[in-house]
Image 1 (cartoon, rainbow, N blue to C red):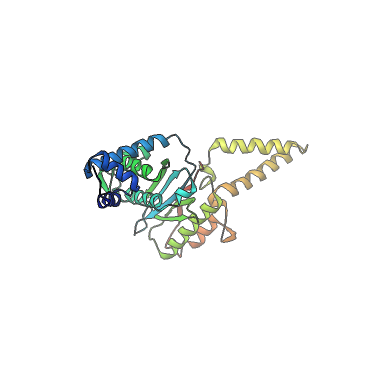
Image 2: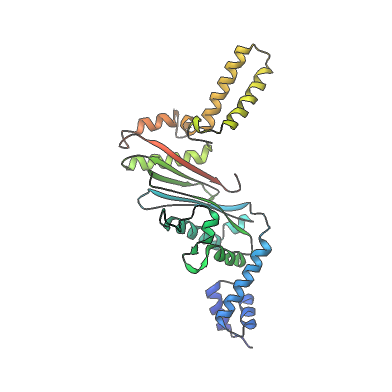
Length: 293
């Protein structure tokens, strides 16, 4: 059957697939548009299956805040190459997926708790497809393996701030506990999100650190101190001092504030309490770096 250029153009406008792919799909289905769409979808499945085993060490991070800044989403999606991570199709998929996570009512049966649940949701822009099925079409269109790696959503416990570092390789979502979100509090929350992006703390406070991580550091400090050959009491002081420095590096509250190193983050929160309308407390944070744990 002879396939007109106009019919091919129409299918391309619907699918964004290549000219030859659309022409072949129409030829294989005798010009039936619906069957051609199914054909291309199946082809996308084949491409996705072929790509599924490929490493996805590149990608991007998206952050999305609700207008009242009490709800926020942080999302990481991975792909094979940095080139694809910058393409319009990849960026549009990530932004739309972040918006879908944010739009799902909190506490609803359909509210995604993990990536597996998210992938099984209907794709809001085309509800006849699941997120996984739509992703398969995107993979077929782009020609690279794409993986939704992780996401987090904060809601209902305070003021939420987000920060995406230049290049969208690092993103942070931070929740600041406060009774009345003021403009000063919003500025502070954004500064704290930038602090997390820059310093990569392991926890908010030392009490939240994994005991195994602390024990490992203590063992290293003790071994280093004993090499000095100094008395046991001196060794104990050396270990205590090095452990204190470790806490200053990895605990957000004990870190020097990046915009004013003379203040710790803890001191910053106390000093800004009045200006922000009351006691300030960092409730939680998430920091995603593409390809990192």
